[in-house]
Length: 119
Image (cartoon, rainbow, N blue to C red; front, side, top):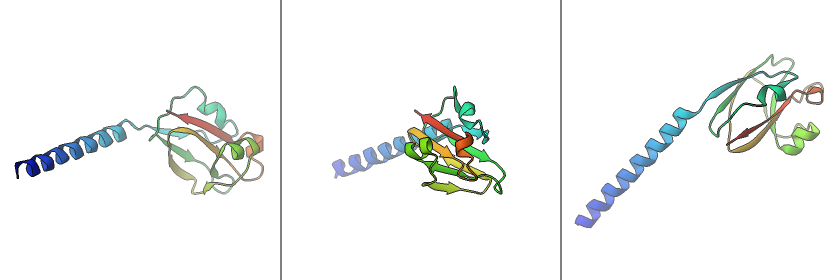
């Protein structure tokens, strides 16, 4: 019986520790207001991003959108990916490089795209 109680206590402590780590990690996340324009890549250069950070895209949805694409979509200005079009989109970064383009009216080809690397 004593072993059963000890195991339950150990599991509760482990779960509590895991919860604390998750909460502390979420508290470290930053929100970045993206300059979603034809020089978006310039905006992101030199900035540090971490997995869990939030990109906040504010734009006029009648003329722009945000599409999360893969590297091929970024370099080739493709539009296959998750599209956002509210004009006030919040996207949480995962680890690694995330790519975003505006797929409307040839805007990507004019430079309205951005690559962000989150550590």
